[in-house]
Length: 317
Ligand SMILES: NC(=O)c1ccc[n+]([C@@H]2O[C@H](COP(=O)([O-])OP(=O)(O)OC[C@H]3O[C@@H](n4cnc5c(N)ncnc54)[C@H](OP(=O)(O)O)[C@@H]3O)[C@@H](O)[C@H]2O)c1
Image (cartoon, rainbow, N blue to C red; front, side):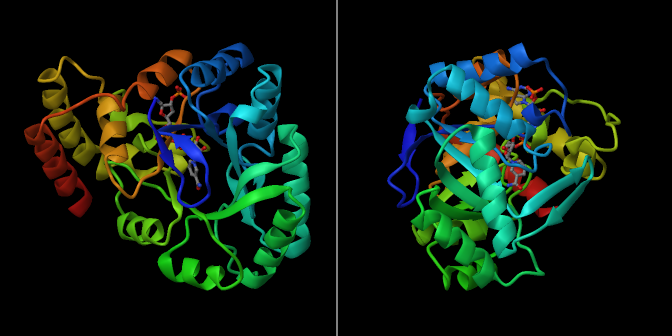
């Protein structure tokens, strides 16, 4: 496993962060508890020391599961946890933004209980709440930091103007954007955030799994599934463009000992100097192992150029 400093936080984090959205049991394929726990154990064995979760992942279910397994493994002290606030799960398809002072305090206290811990390494504002002034949300987060309940504050899904504005009320140390070979919309914002000294953690690093090459034909997912509701590349027109990219990835893979496509995608992401760690969601041991071993893979300059050209074509279209 490779490690990088996470901005100026002092946290040295693994190249891969394990995402736990699916482990909440809503929005993704559902696995039994033993399988999911084994994926977390595999992550610990591989040296993954950063785990991302949120109360929005099925009303705290993902947090509760992660907290329980880390406790059983006696691992809490050796890992960093990022969780989130300001985006409240109502039902499978309804999430409500809520950055109000009292609500943020309550959400954090609930997350601490869910995670069976007395501190959260990184608390991210999940999405900006247009109905609450940033100052109010930050007052709550600054209080939580002063009390030692959270150690660092970050944001997710913010643009540069929003980050500049919220930084007036306290130190923002991390940024969590959607970023992968199939979505580079946040790239300039990520460069800006990294230049400010923030840690940058990408989500959807496998494009919701499509970059593993697992889906070669259009598939219909249930209404609440993230591959239907959240990620757009499982539908046309994006689907066909991603299939073109996969063809190039197949060729690069064949020229490099059949390196797994997921490994190419994660290595591509981590090669970026403005990325600190790539979050990947998986609930299965063998996929944790495959993904965790992405970062030692070496590709020649020509292969990188081919991949970059294919990505450019897709993301510019
Ligand atoms: N801040 C935000 O707004 C936000 C939004 C989305 C996600 N996130 C965070 O980022 C994490 C990662 O994003 P994500 O889970 O949405 O998307 P992702 O990591 O791009 O994709 C997850 C999907 O990829 C599959 N997968 C993983 N590794 C694979 C492999 N080697 N081969 C084949 N399939 C593989 C998983 O399947 P299985 O689980 O079935 O193995 C799952 O269906 C989330 O879990 C969450 O913690 C944050």
